[in-house]
Image (cartoon, rainbow, N blue to C red; front, top):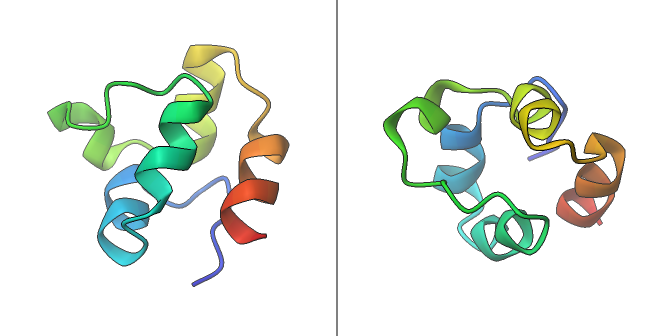
Length: 61
């Protein structure tokens, strides 16, 4: 699975369970929040002030 800025957090976690640790290492600690399941990676990164390209590099690396 190739993850993009438009991929939903819920889809990332379902298809790549090890992504939770990566996302949390960038400061996304609310992965269990119901709204995060329908939020894109790009939107979540913007809310948290995180560089989405850095996250994508780790998730797809």
